[in-house]
Length: 212
Image (cartoon, rainbow, N blue to C red; front, side, top):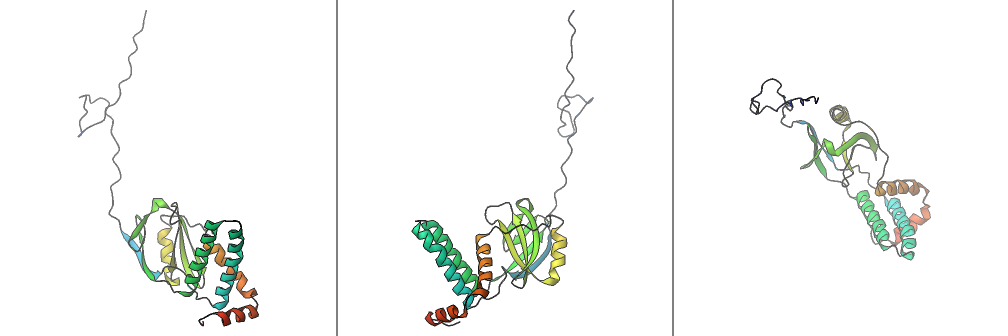
């Protein structure tokens, strides 16, 4: 004798407070979403876009020598693209070492970090930390983006605590290793400059058409 098996009833979703099937025995209530909040500006400050410590002639000579030592072998190997990258990097470092950065406006919002007019949402940001570089405190914010992979902005010492207390509510404080080619190149130059013979500096300074 076959036994009739009755499938359990499936709860219905309430629409406008009513069950579409008309059954009120086992309605399914959908948990409402958390209410949306209007974004708030928690803190803002004006600061240079990067650390700046004006470089002297020794730095630029070391920069040129290192660039030549790297570019010449690359050209012999017909690595023209890499040669252009090194040349561009040397040019950027030279400009950064001589030209002071512009100031920009930064804001920490409940939804993200704003740099100028661009808002970077927290879902695209990984972590932050503050580090002293070239005599300035620099706030680093790593991202999940390809470009920019990191946001950097100068902060004043009296603003550091407020910035850290605000950001720690949304991002972890975790310093990450440098993976920027230009930063690594600059670090190499900083170590090379003190070892550069004064005779080499004097020789190139006489050849330059302008004075520092």
